[in-house]
Image 1: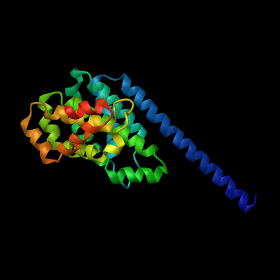
Image 2: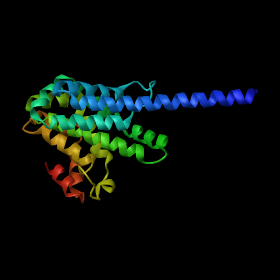
Image 3: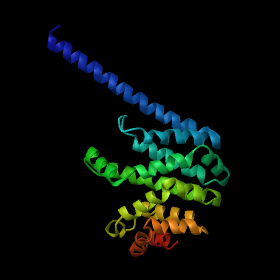
Image 4: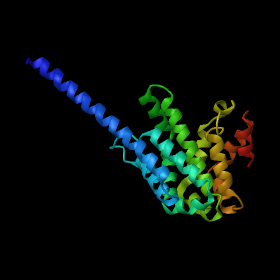
Length: 229
C-alpha cells in the first residue's frame, strides 16, 4: 500500500471515530434527559443542575453545549412551577448555579457566539437560555424566604444587565413565546422586590430603574406589563 493510501485510510478511520464519538455523546445527553424526566423532584433537580454546571466550566474546557443548557434550564423551570418542589430545587444548589450562569452570558460572550457561529443562531440560543434562567429565578423568588438570598448572590446585576442590553430598537416588535429576555428579567425583578424594601433599593442602586422605564415604550404589551410590575 502506498504512503498516500495509508494516510487516506488513517484519515477515514479518524473521521469515523470522531463521528462515532459525537454520536455517542449526543445519545448520552438524550438518555440523561430521559432519565431525569423519570426521576422524583429532588433527584430530577440534582440531575438537571448537574447539566447546568457544565456551563460554568473554565474556558480551557470545551465550550458549553448551549442547546443542552437551554433544555435543562427549561426542564428545571417546569419543575419550579410546582410549589412543592421549589425547596428541593434550592436545596440542590439552584441559586448557586443559575445566578453565575446568568451572569456568565455577558455581551462579550454573545459577540463570541456570533463570531463562532458566523450568524445569529448562537445569539438565539443564548437568549433562550437567558429567558429560562430568568424564569427560574422569578419562580424561586415567589417564596419570600429566598428573595434576599437570590439578590445577595448577584442576580440583580445580571438581570439589570439584560434589561440594558435589550435596547428600545430591539424590543419595539412583539416577540413570540414568553415576550423575550426583557420581559423575563423584569418579571424576575418584580418577584424579587415584592414587599421587600431592601431589594427595591438594591434595584435602584444597580441603576435598574432607567431601563425598566424604557421598557414602557415597547410595542409588546407583555413587556410593558412586566416593566409596570
